[in-house]
Length: 245
Image (cartoon, rainbow, N blue to C red; front, side, top):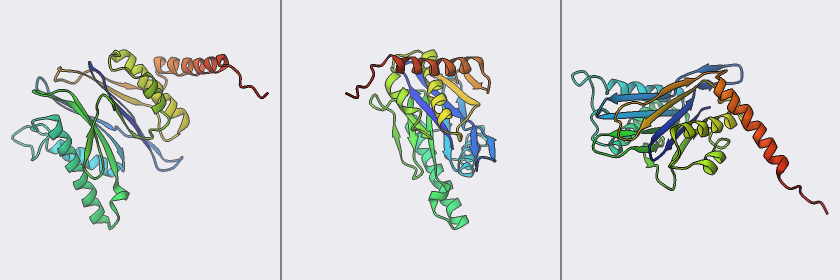
């Protein structure tokens, strides 16, 4: 399983993904699920994947081949797409193409090779945008009403995002919020785990921002995790008791 979140703020985009994949409790591996493409001053694109690992790796490999230097790249390329809408469209078409190919080659339904993708960033001439791409290749865009997307194991980490998100929050607070969302998910589901990958994109920067891997044993993450547990216990104790009379 997987957990990835893309968060849209007024000041930029925040991406976080776990790195755990598993095929049973005794077969756990680490695979990167966050990928970047940049033409500094012109565009920055970040993509996160969840679902069938063979599908997502094939999608990223094909996008990479089509993002090579101009004289080497194939077509269509996300490095040539004129807008983030067109980037999302190309990602969706690529995902659908890979699922259909693998389904035909293996004689199985497309559901066996299903995957979902979050893609976001900014192309010069347009605003920063964030999209959720479905296995069928269609997609939806983040808005003021839906300012973040989750893929993978979403249910455990959603409540705190819904309660604490603020479009004007700082990057620092957004990272803290996402860490707590991931901590809740990791505590509830063994199929999600550290290390976590983080990327911050600043609006109108047209270049990749801070990239960081949060490893097992990270001091801030451990302090945040234990402090949040204690804060929840304290808040619970301060709630009025239920009357049985």
